[in-house]
Image 1 (cartoon, rainbow, N blue to C red):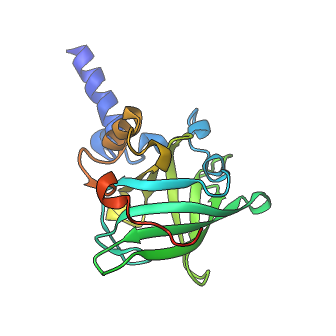
Image 2: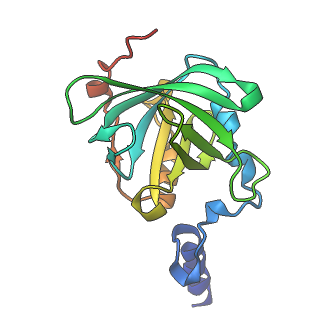
Image 3: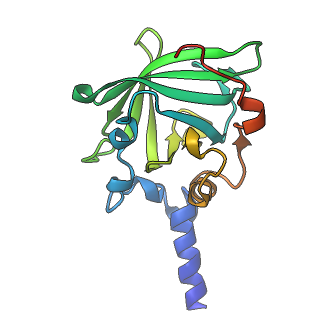
Length: 201
């Protein structure tokens, strides 16, 4: 019985925002996790690097992407190490006809008292609107992001480097299920999306 209670307590702490009085998800607790949440390490990649939005907990966006977005690819256009920022070009489909494109400046910033840049600050078209996504986990293959302006703070996105899209590491999918949702929208079908190309080389 004691083991069961300890296990339930651990699960409540890890998997829930509020079970057993927990109000802060475990990935927001900085101790020992900052090295897995380095936003600049994720952004600071060679020009031309591409990621795809593989899964998300939502599929409608009122800022840039529109309704029922899918087949999303983001490409690094330029890198500014001094500002810890990149210019990124998004290519995608949505509920309206045609292939759509959005260019944004994305900056690695510190949030929540972190000593390491642990969030992406998106400067939308015109540079007026800024949206911030928090890094739950990042490595050289996938980025798992919390999208606090979606779903009452619980929105999530899983980005995967395009060269791995046919063999997404199980650990990336596992973390999406643990920290975000047991189900979500599968947004990148290789056979459907392979014809969605950015005409700008």
